[in-house]
Amino acid sequence: MQPGGRSPKSPSHPGLKCPFFSNLHSANLIPSDRVSFAAIAATTVAMTSYQFLTDFLWGAATSAYQIEGAAREGGRGPSVWDVFSATPGRVFNRNTGAVANDHYHRYESDVAWMVKLGIKHYRFSISWSRVIPDGRGAVNEPGMDFYRRLVDCLLANGITPHITLYHWDTPQALEARYGSWQSREIVQDFADYCTAIVQRLGDRVTHWMTLNEIVCFTHMSYDVGKTPPHAPGVRVPRRKDVWQTSHHALLAHGMGCQAIRAAAPRPCSIVLVDNPGVTVPLTESAADIAAAQTAFHTNWVNGGVIFPALTGAYSDVFWQQLGSDAPEVADGDLELIHQPIDALGLNIYTGTYVRAADNAQGYECLEYAKGYPRLHMPWLWVVPDSLYWAVRHVTEVLDRPELPLLITENGCAAQDEKTRQGEILDSDRIFYLRQHLRSVHRAVAEDYPLKGYFLWSLMDNFEWAWGYDRRFGILYNDYRTQERTPKASFHWYAECIRQNRVV
Ligand code: GCO
Image 1 (cartoon, rainbow, N blue to C red):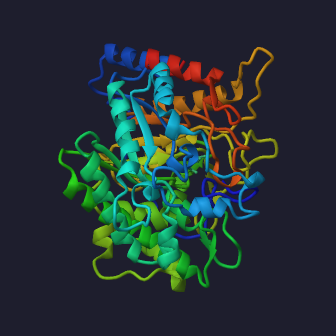
Image 2: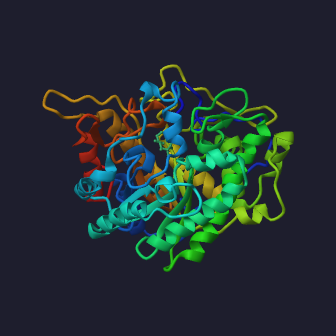
Image 3: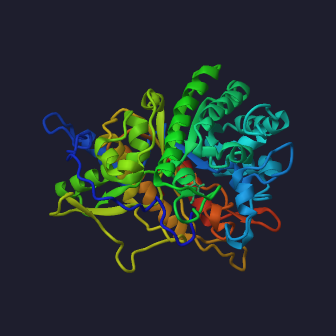
């Protein structure tokens, strides 16, 4: 994320007043009249041993620009991240993704690591400019072949591919042609790209994710008055223009859903991946829970992305707050945005504590205490309950009790070092992951519709504006030799998967 900057993972909260949401969910309460002791015992054991049911989905995640490399091979065209990272001052140490983890050439041994880990689900993304170098028009079949080989290798090893169609690497050709997300033209181009991919891989792939973290490639990529930290890193004249980029992204998600469904030769699932701002009640009193729910509703990231995508409307209160910054919304846009999805993907790394307050909005968002634990990113405050509350807020505040949820990313950067024996004993990462998985378990045990967990990330990789300086992997990568070494957290996660519980 942005060096030294404020991330949407710990967002600010405009002081909006909004309706009070009561706790609608009662599945966590054992019905008092007809409960059997056997049921109580079973629940208790499941809760205390952190055991998951057999269908819980264990996975790991990566993205194309962060691992593939081979930037100029097989007919791939440049993406905005190639251009941005080659621009002095944009990425730490002038690192680029030109080689990255060389996964393009090493995918088979990387899949072998997945097999050792024991994951049955792998989330990765496709590089748009590898398969359509100009962003629109002719498909580069040698580029497609790489993904055919990768998918076949995964399937041969019993691993289900979950493909993210867009993880921030817009073809540079579209940036040059019309300013990528600034233009409504990208909506049709994205849908055509989805069609091209699903026509070619839809016989083997049935799990699709449209866009990853809309706020990061719009509000962190276009800004007013200062250069934003993510590619293409463009300054725009008005805040309205920034909101227009995320509106276009929502439209692309909607039209992408339609394109995938039209092109898919087999029944498939479609997921939107979002990184909502997660508000965590400071105490679990009724008053603080209600305050956290209200704050979730009024958070600017949530109001501008997850609400329109899941409800078909920017909320009234949010729209009023935007005023003249609000994007242009054409007739039919909200219907297009509001496509049925089969699950929502949540990328959760941290959260913000909230408590009830005697002020106009009824809550206050708290600064982190001096000395509050934080891992190796400025925004990476350790708030394990954020996972549970993200799930619960989506279910209750957005009133979508049936919508299946996936944790599509969770993990941390740590200051990994090799011991003399060549081990990476990342007890800090294990601490972080264990606490977060317990929070996942709580959500499942309370019967929220959380179906699976993808750890970010399978291996250290190109961490955007931080280049290779920050390591999120459970496989250590030596960028000089491309040797992968399992960290202690790799063995720990493998044991969780093997026992189907948090160990
Ligand atoms: C994101 C992206 C990932 C990051 C990860 C760590 O959430 O920013 O999806 O590509 O690498 O989150 O910052």
